[in-house]
Image (cartoon, rainbow, N blue to C red):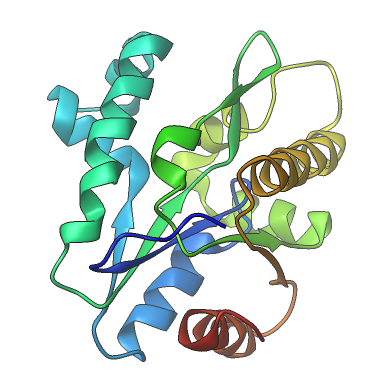
Length: 199
């Protein structure tokens, strides 16, 4: 395995919309010294001067890829000991086809990939509670004639496949964490990963 550069220890914590990655990341950061969370989409929006997700979606895939490489390759220089990057492995916004959001050029600097999986029924419950942002979050799953629950299931399968392919291709550890039950228990598992790269 390639030697990681000195500096902050970087971890990519991903999963589909509604898998709970933002809640888990925040919980871990609040209870783990010298640990911060950065949000992939927000960093990209700032990089391109976008004020909304719609504006970001209008930026070409090529430019977004270059932006991610530039932004995330520099995270090793962050002052915190641990950096959790909250993002998606894939996102479904173009004709129902998965668009990869993790680029090998910057993920090679990471200590491990973390993938949150969650019972599809629980994800659906979470999305339905988020009334204000429901439409955008559903679009982030997949656009097709499937039921919402089928979309969630297929999206989670695609995301898992992408994470596994990345891990295998560049020989980086992939840790699968089930977030279907207690938030604190899930956060403890993630804390164990960033403490010793296992749980």
